[in-house]
Amino acid sequence: MLLHPRPPPTPAAVDRECLRAAAAIATRGRYASAAAVTRDACLALGVSSFEAVGLSTAAVPSLCQVWEIERLVGSYASAFAATHGIACIANLEPEVVAALRSRLVPPLPPPPAAAAATAAEEEIDIEEESEASEASEASEAS
Image 1 (cartoon, rainbow, N blue to C red):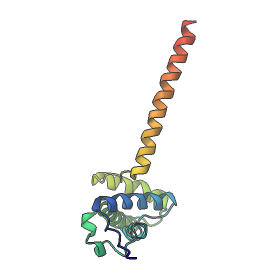
Image 2 (image 1 turned 180 degrees about the horizontal axis):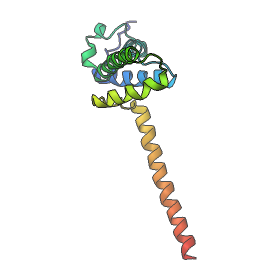
Image 3 (image 1 turned 180 degrees about the vertical axis):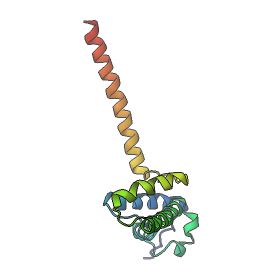
């Protein structure tokens, strides 16, 4: 019996897996570095590296964004530490977020499964609101 290797993942599949990996890492309270996202995505896709399937980091938009955010956060954290004698993470976080926003760095989009769940929740909320408004209108009419 011959076993055929599965086809390599498409760039879109790798991008979706990187988003899922970044969200999973952040949900666990960890720092979603480009290396950690790459490692988790490669494990999930069953590949040793993206280069092994003919992809580069530049071909994966979400991984490029994670890498850029990591680079900027590192730069801002170094500058913050150099300019503040005594500081804590609570002081650093708002400045890093403001610095990322000033560079127009958008937040990572949610992974596709999370986006679908959010959309489903919004649909439920809309239905519940319409039922609630109908109930209040009926009670006002009585």
